[in-house]
Length: 375
Length: 130
Image 1 (cartoon, rainbow over the protein chains, first blue to last red):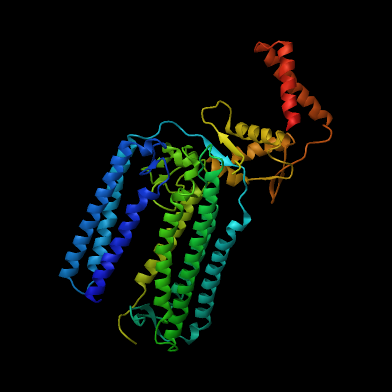
Image 2 (cartoon, rainbow over the protein chains, first blue to last red):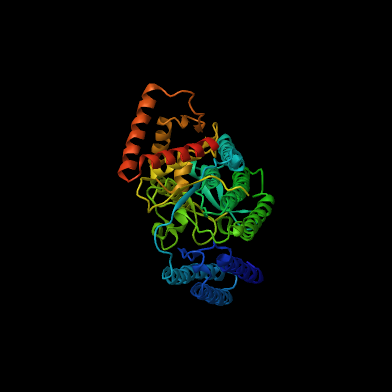
């Protein structure tokens, strides 16, 4: 890779990652401080301001250290992507430490006692599932198209088929034709597209966090946020499915000599997907805030209720554990988006299934016999 | 913005969670806040929002169905029903027994017959105004 491009990618990646991390306290729900419910007045107090300032200082220091390490490695090993990977890995390792420090400090001012639980007697609107269901349909359809296309042409494939493509969209790794070398990518398209679509459906029905009494402002904020988030994830699913389907079909076409490699649409789609994912996340974060926090400002000082306000239900402010709660997905206490209810066996089973499938796909890909030589 | 109807579970209250849920829905129906034909949230959705076990909400809905406040349908959920035109003999006997037990408790708590009449008149007026 061009050293200038490598530098630009390194700096751009760090700036994007750092910007997301730095705005987290700015978009957080009132009353929550680094995964701890400290109540609305506690979140505005001097101690909360001091802890938040510590987070900013810690994160800026982590960003500078990561950038310095990345720059040093890039200069020592020009042409290798080592610097970018190392700097992001270092930032990924330092961030939990800075968070943990802030979290432990926040625990000292945690709100005492178990909060009330509040639920609105408003059934979910049916239309909230429209886009997520379209996403599931797209995931299944894209996966099936990939599988059928590969299956129909299986007999026409040569003894060696491409199983990896380089940055120039040309095949750079070849494997002997077998069920797994042909079907791995189509199956990945099916599993990944469907799983992400199902996730969008589950997000559309995720647990609501409500303030009370607040004239219903937080309920409306939650409904709007969930809808926007589910629609956004559905868009990501459709783009991912489209890209995987194209890659799958074109890898078969390349093997049969009908195409020189992946189509030019792939890097274009990848750029659209990354822009959509990053831009959409920033837009949702700034427009809605954590779980719609920015829409519920008019709720005043109404306290938070339910699981989000219950400190006893959260481990390190990151992991929600409630055996009674049938929720699969729960809004994150710190950060943006949703996390699993680790007390729900169905949520554990869902996570385990996804991890097993992903690791199995990776292992199959790694252990497939392959060669980095042209046919 | 109109405040939506909510159910509040107070962990400090002595009564069971399912009783708190059923009592608040009964009150909402009696006061007209929940009209006949209204579809209540599904068991899973309400249990998830409240962070309680599915059985807690299911038990509350079953109790409300036994008492004639809702009808549980397989697919379309739980529907608020119109009050019966006439109570059955068993229902009437059961309610009279419950009223008797309440009156006994009121007497034991120190309310005179006049106090009980006043309370009954006031609560009946509240119900009729709804």
